[in-house]
Length: 360
Image 1 (cartoon, rainbow, N blue to C red):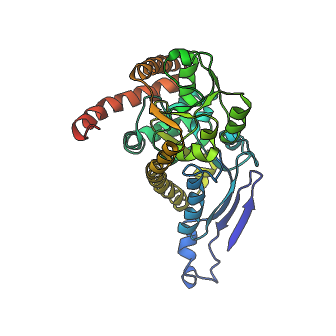
Image 2: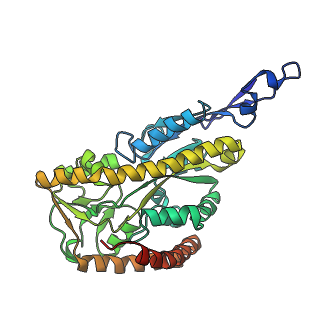
Image 3: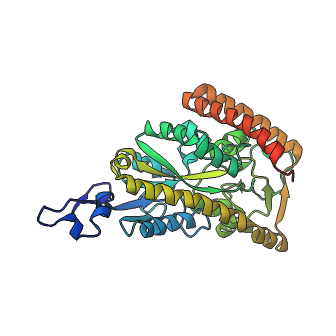
């Protein structure tokens, strides 16, 4: 039989109970399956609109896939940004037990937990394959879990994308002088770097960027991949699109789950969630790589200027990044611990990458 329990957080969980002796388990083929799983329904806020390519599409696909592989035992009810939780408030809502879980970019937690930026996107940091290696096979996941377990949360890597663009600007970006006083939307550690270089940095959810550009609240912005930025219409208001994505060479997205709830789940349910997320890391990165060429071709045909930042400007950004990372490590012990670990891993990986890969 199934006993259903509902929680204020929105979790509904149905626990499989062994049948009485008069109804032997062998008489019900599904009995053995029920013993290692339970039915669960989660209200699930997300930080990105699900109509966005890649970063919105992948959480819908996760919900559909985990339902299929679990035979309907896991049901995820997706709520768009702002519907029940603000776009930047997903982690806080889970931490306060208002929802059982959510999907977000952990860099939005930077104000509350500075080290979160290191497991979401680091300027001049790891590229996607390097990040996957660090997270899954070199201790990164354990460090991320240690950081978030202190907050009563379980992080599960569930999406990864290629480098973002360096931003959209109304006028050419040629030197550091062009950054000074520039009103720009920028997120994460990259925003701290631009502040150090004189930029007037603000952070806005994706849905608020176009109106802010249109009204002149900001003069420039970064957000994500070209295919996503095009859907937001950023190219209609700012005609200069720069590369490379120095601030986010790889961008990771996570589920955040109430830790006590996560630990109470049957191992089968946890495995379904983890395995589906591993598949989504692969799928989201594949889409991120596959979809950009056509978008860039379209930009070139419609008058959008796409170009790379000068080597001189990149050197200044790299210098300021090193200062920001060192300053954050001094201020926060968790940041220092993860930062040291990443630097040690990257020192070894660098030699492998130098020897093994072609130079493009």
